Image 1 (cartoon, rainbow, N blue to C red):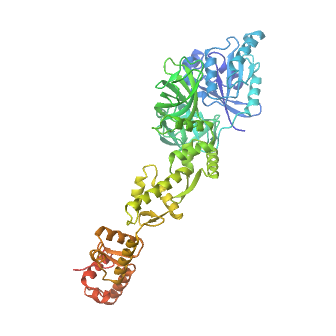
Image 2: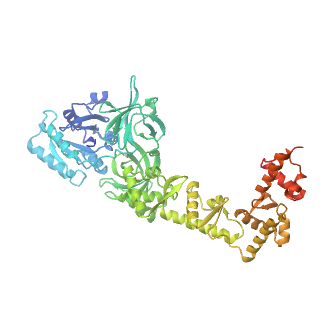
Image 3: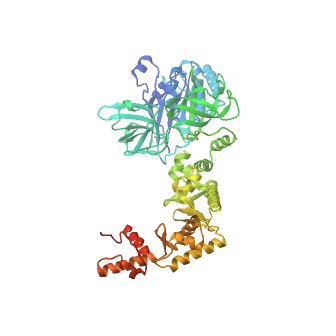
Amino acid sequence: MSDFIIGTAGHIDHGKTQLILALTGIDTDRLKEEKERGISIDLGFAEITLPSGRVAGIVDVPGHEHFIKNMLAGATGFDLVLLVVAADDGVMPQTREHLAIIDLLGVSEGVVVITKADLVDEEMLELVAEEVRELIADTSLSGAEVMTASAVTGAGVEDVAAAIEKIAGAIKPRAAAGPFRLPIDRVFTLRGIGTVVTGTLWEGTLRVGDEARILPDGREVRIRNLQVHGKDVTKAHAGQRVALNLPGMAVEEIRRGEVIVTKGYLSETRLVHARLFLLPQAPRGLKTRSRIRFHHGTAEVMARVTLLGNEEEVEPGGSGLVKMRLEHPAVTRYGDRFIVRSYSPMATIGGGTILDSHPPVRARRGADLQEQLRSREAGDPADVVGLVLKRRGSAMSEPDILGAAELTQEEATAGLRQLLDSARAQPIEVEGKKRFIDSEALSSWDEQILAMVEAFHKERPREAGIEKETLRSRLGGGLEPGTFEAILARAQREGAINVQAGRVSSGGGRRLSEAEQAEKAKMLDLIKEGGFSPPFLRELQDRLGLDQKKARDLLSILLEEGAVEPVNQEFYLAAGKLSEAEQLIRSQVAIAGKLEVGDMKSLFDTSRKYSIPILEYFDRKRVTKREG
């Protein structure tokens, strides 16, 4: 069975810490100030062994309104909650605020425990129980069992443990496959060991020796030691409380709110798109430019809100699609829950779900953007992966898709498979590796390339084709070089284009007129008939009655077709003649030990006008070397 985290919630002095002590024998108040004041100030940690032997981690949160920030750092990792209400006090302000937070975070498994049952009579217990049932009726805990217990007498404590055991099987397992993510909630140092950080492993599996990054700063670390529930382990998986030893890191270099992730997984962001819900009890609506406190994982970041819908404000009790521009980077992922508090005075006013952690910076608000976000909100992996491919436009690898889609490995793989099966995406080989591209994007690139090639032929019908780099630059910056080459290769295999000597031409060839075809053929005949003494370019122009540009265009076509070979810019031989010349030269040198210019006349049956350029050509090719 999967591991999970139990968290507490409730008003100050309602007995959360005492209940955990009664359940586990562990006092979670670890700070000197907590002992002196008799209240929880920061997060406390424990583990519980359930009746079946199953072990779960526990995060005990402070109940004072001044420490809601600390409470939120723990609550974002809850799988199951113990909502604690004191029998002698009933529902209080932080009971309501903590419950609102639990509801916004979507924690649906829990037990309501009415503590200090030894201090009141049965009638009062029933009144408090009824008050609590009314409170949770329209929340994620609406089906939770309401129980009574006393940490002093021990009455009901075993029943609470049994209730936890009973509902544990309903907890949705966290994704243990794939890369890991651990928001840091505590940093300290141990003599002889060094810096230790702790947190709840939100996803993935973490192993000793793994390379990791601490985000948002991006520092790289290697995991030296791991502990789960105080015991050394070689690996930990999602749903466990984990302590990590990080060699070479000072305590001052790490802080709560940072996140440790698998190297290469996730990246920081300053801009997110989300669905935001405003609590009915929020004092006012939320408008564009509102400054808020964004709580995610163990971090708190100031942010500015921009509404992406048509409404002027998100009203209390309502919701809206929003953009949040963060004042400091955070590490979020699609589907993560978050809490929003007012900037001043501080109060919990809402929360929501991350829909896009890395939206285009200049994404325009409007119907298209809203439709994309609603599609992501629906949560269909195929739609999410499809939007990633469509936005990128170029080919992507599976790891790139996983990172950009911000899905689990299983979800991303399933979504990609659906897209391929429905032909919404296509596999394409890029530099020998399998990649994937949106089908509509691929068709669009094909159409643009063909249109540009056709336009080039129409404008310059005698040229061999448009240069590849010129073509790519005209397509704009959305197509990276590897994908561009892959699309060209694919189009060439399908006969739509030809790619030769760095130029791209139409699959149907260039549109030479009959007269131009005849001129090209005559030019080739003159070069072939000349042997090693064909007409130079200027002579070809004169004999064929062509201007210089047209003569060069026709020669370019003959070069592309492999019918002629250049000696220099003005002198061309028929294909095969340079190879023949090289063989003759090598034979002469083998016999005589050298080659005189005068030997050329007998070897090539030509004059110095032609033999000198041919010898210079072979000097450049280092077949011959001129002396003197």
